[in-house]
Length: 188
Ligand code: 5GP
Image 1 (cartoon, rainbow, N blue to C red):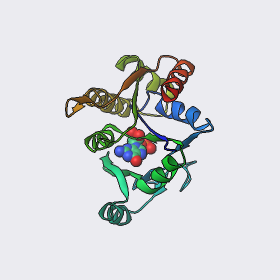
Image 2 (image 1 turned 90 degrees about the horizontal axis):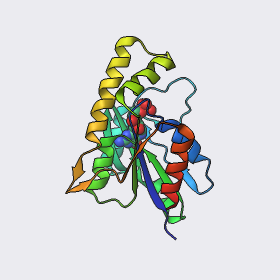
Image 3 (image 1 turned 30 degrees about the horizontal axis):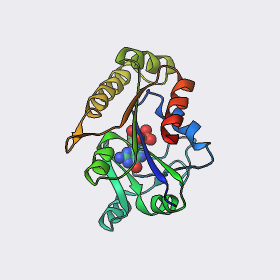
Image 4 (image 1 turned 135 degrees about the horizontal axis):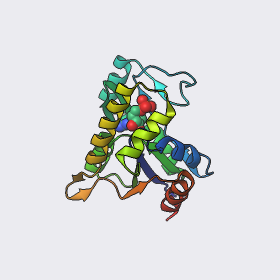
């Protein structure tokens, strides 16, 4: 039996992480633990949230072809390890990747089979308000995140060989409705 790859992307503040957290609870879903060279944040665990690697270790793995895709995001490297994904798909599991748009582009360029979903905020204004309400960023940083988000939303509209990068764009106006919609897409 072979499983299904599901790619979820979306800018910071769109609710992507909350959606993925809910999907992880489904019994047939397995979540890809990416490798990264960024420092560990408070409450994160090595091997659970990410495999935290040094840059030389990450680069050696790139050389050995261990990554399905990898990208530089904000000066740090992030990548999806190939072996655990192949094992999960061989077991018939739904394998969830939470990756940014450049990684999705690489998967599409290799014609990787899967369901590709982009989660976005109702509007840039709403995204800005959510970041302000979160209260954890300075005003300048909020504007920086808003700019990155706008760029990601535009890049997500791109194409590879005449095919759209994403199969579905889900506007997250209500978290429960978004989770229900993405679950339905995964099951379809
Ligand atoms: P963060 O540092 O906030 O955890 O993640 C930053 C960005 O990197 C997010 O957009 C996240 O989806 C993306 N990301 C996480 N893991 C991977 C990965 O394995 N590959 C790619 N291409 N992007 C990733």
